[in-house]
Image 1 (cartoon, rainbow, N blue to C red):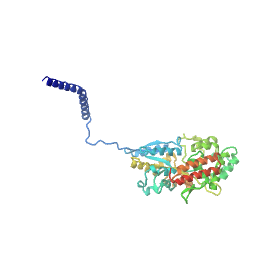
Image 2 (image 1 turned 90 degrees about the horizontal axis):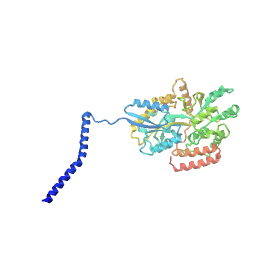
Image 3 (image 1 turned 135 degrees about the vertical axis):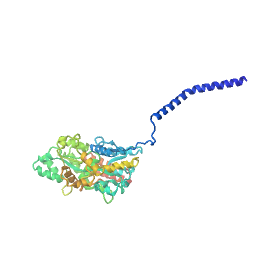
Image 4 (image 1 turned 30 degrees about the vertical axis):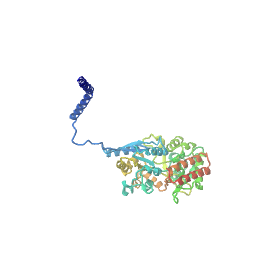
Length: 453
């Protein structure tokens, strides 16, 4: 009996302790129920289901200029509440074309990349197809027929459309018209420059009127711009149409023209500083040192007046590049194309933005606010007599003689090899024959591997 009484007492004591220890917990639960009840009564839920945010955000990587800002702002206003394009800025002031290529490639290797649409130098399109969405299903032939053939043809790889042009460019001669007009017979010389002056005459002008100074600014840093400069001086494509591969780099004409470029620099017609300069560097140096001729791109501009000295920049005019006697001027095509990441979660929204950017309306915004060369035919066939339209018609004539760099699968590696060897030759670190022999052996090895971007 005493034993049972003790057990009963023990159970009662345990229950009392359990209830006591549970009081805080029960208090918390009660408070929570009261709080939820208060919210429900204070903010009644609609009979309609809760709407998830509908705005699709498209991340777009490029050098974000004033033109890009205008384009994105207009697009976002048109699609307010549905699509928002968010810019990822990769400025030319911090990254040259090679550095941008590597930065985007590293980012796209990760499937978690937030880049949806990205802009690439038109020669890099084959490099990025492994991460890109084929675009043919999204764009009708009617839409594509309005785009310049010279631009659109750079968007295909293996017969498939992988890119859409954003803007095109073409190598050109910038020159100080005020300095030329000040020369004896300056008017006549100026007219010949507008039609494409020969290298022989340009060097004759240098010897006669500028004997003790540099007269020409090429881009000669070891990067893609050097290949463009050399290809233009060479005067023909580096692609062998018979094989679909890079031409033999030990060809006598190639050796001759690389020596010509080397002698421009080592002989003082171009300052040795160009060995470490890209496009903007060359223009700054030329304007500061009264150098009359600069190789450049027509899309280089001074909109806003903060890129170059506005007074000096206004003295520059654009003309076709020099040519060798008996040969045409052969500018190299440049420009940037848009590609869509195959891992993008907002493909349809991204396509909507790409379609607008390459449309006449989008191209007009870029042209008017930034001066980029449009990819729509209609800009070049207008009968308007304003200065912008006259310049576009002149540039279109230059495009008719333009040449493309070799769009081969291994081009990015070939470009690294060729720019390095060209730079060594023009810097007089190695002779032309030896340098191009080394370059050719390395390029042949890369081409034999068949892949590897």
